Amino acid sequence: MPQIPGADPRPLTGEPLALDLLNTRWIDTEGHHDLLETPEGLATWLAAPTVREITDPHEPPADAATLDRLLRARTALDGLVAGGDPPPEGAVKALNEVLSHGRVRRILGPDGTPRTRVDVDATWAPAWHAADNWLELLAGRPERIRPCANNACILHFYDVSKNGTRRWCSMAGCGNRAKAQRHYARRTGA
Image (tube, rainbow, N blue to C red; front, side):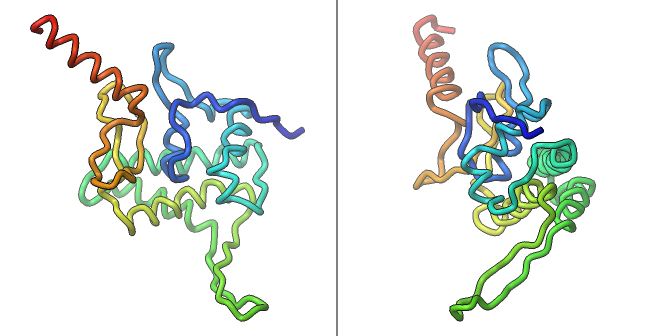
């Protein structure tokens, strides 16, 4: 039976797919959350515009197989954002394993224009596209992949600001808290 997606409870959405997958875990005043711990959460994530745009037309099912494959991709991405130069061998191997389940083909369309086609099983599609998106981010501006500057926050973002100085997952959340803490410290002399 298909899962009906609910409202997306995450504090940060709309990031590139790889980071959006990482941001299915977050911390707030109520504690740690993981959107992908339930089939309903998986359905919610699969229905997000960022996901639908990239995985369409595959229509991935919100089932145990899709969830398992997404969790594999998220674990690999976790290892890669943790950093290191070179990146951790286990994380590289895990991401490459996810990528091995899809194939990119270049074809000539009926109108004579070149096209790229991805052949991937629907249950692998979200995980594969998230892994592929990570490679795109690395090929573009890898220094713009950042964790939130709030040490208590585990969210990541892709800095698209003109000068590349974004520090917070959200100015309304973590950024505002940091400003309030600085203001309090100045007023109290702490």
